Image (cartoon, rainbow, N blue to C red; front, side, top):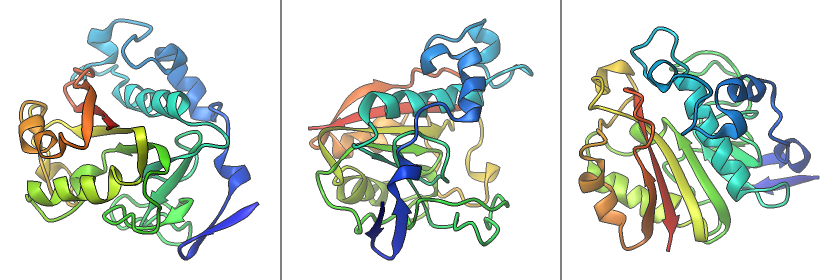
Length: 230
């Protein structure tokens, strides 16, 4: 079944896939059941970006899959913002560049998103609808460079707006406390550390969401934020 969303078509059969994507089997070798808090090995190795044998990328992917499986299902899809198809189960993958026809302007490669749209505006999506909005290394690319108020507005007017009450916004954000975020990617517009994100961003949207989880990764690369819509 194909449905129209704005100017983009997507196929429900392709979206409503199980968690058994090929890469996910590899992730579960190190994070069984996608539990990103309990690595199957020494966390000082697997969850420390400075260690040459780290599996921080697997930890981050486990986080995304964990929350997708917890919140979503074949007939109750979430949104994964800034990603291409095949990454997060039971999610509509939304990205402005991954059209499967052109090279990504920043990272190269071609891949299909389910919906070609800019995550700065989710106006094509209805309010109070989705059980999950996922964002892995996307928020720092949004809005006006260095403008925290703009990001708070984006979250309130778009990312939180489309969540149903009780829905979850789960984000992975590069940690400026661990490394210099802005020069690490030419498209980065913001740099937050786990030490200042709450005061700079979360306090501005505290009337809309409650904090479920914050900064559990401790991986010297990124921090996680899980919010529940009130």
